[in-house]
Image 1: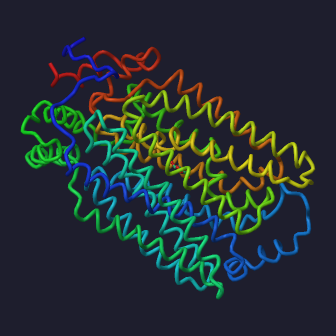
Image 2: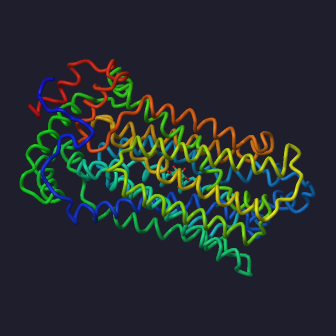
Image 3: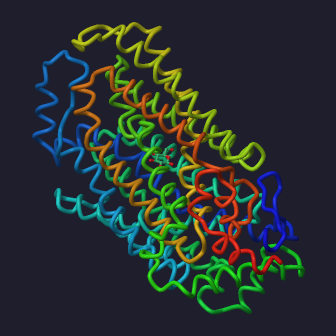
Length: 511
Ligand code: BGC
């Protein structure tokens, strides 16, 4: 092969340098972007189950819920209006991520994070002081724009700052912050739901301003990535930045590869047209399938509706929020496991192991629920079974949290060539948001219609996605981000889409 450098996944090509405190610090600050997303995921479910919030903004839902004498456990609390409130954010994020793609490419990654933080902050304030439904919805749209910008720019930022051998770990800081955001939100809801005056929801919604402030201020101090500096015509600053983040003077090999990647990228004036070219078929497919599958694991059924779900299986108000806190804790801890292992065991191993674990748990939870509520939805859940369900839900969350959770953000951010990386990440975010929206919107209807079969429905998808990974995703651990084309070229299926010439262009500098 031209250039003579073999990129393999068991170490691969390595540039000199260390992991500096500077790069760790920058990565942690950037990862704060995950907090705003996580906080929102965690806060919405709890707030929409607070009586004071419902009676004030959604009185019809509130009365329906109070009057609901139905004993069918599968068909409670179904309100389109309420789910629309929750999921409006995801539509806004979906659209915003496309604009974010351009900002991230043209102005640099940090300004996308900064802009996202500011808009989210305004949304949080609006929600905290809301006096009518319009203020709530407009606030949520602003939150969505913030999430769209942050989720588009942060994973790319992290993957570019990191040295190849620790890219997985640094990137997963983003998912870790998402899970911490969810957990904090669960705790806050637990506390504010007890506030006697019934205004606790204001605190829950308004406190979203805190993580927003953290990423907004943090972004001001963040350096831009060398890749982005070169892409925007600042080669000297890029060199300086490389020295700083790698902690060595010996950066020329990496620098020259970045220059080659950037020369390539200059030939591209329309990333959206370029992303459709044959040679980009593999990363494009991944950036659509991975977020789609991530949502089809069914994780957000747990994240959004854990309190409702646990209430349904027989826990009281308090206990159901508490169980949500427990799943939140498992989510954080299992993400740490992933962070530690991802650059050792690789992405594929975690995908395959996590997928199998989720599958087993879904089948068990579905069977337990079927054994109590059958197809009629009538029945009493005894304590042992209820606790067993919580246990397997936790095991399921753990499986997600060390596989599809973090990898759903990591893999799409590390597989695109520079010129379309930003566009590719926009695609990833928007597909993710689209299906988060669908799940948020449809879950309660699906539960009512499919009953316990819903768990088998998601289990079926987990089988498909695990096979997809096994067959189509090559290992990307340890491969320098601007060398990814060679991994695709070596793949038995995707290799057919990349001509020798395309692979060669990427290799020039390594010769
Ligand atoms: C997903 C979210 C999910 C969260 C749970 C993220 O990776 O994109 O939809 O709620 O993980 O931790």
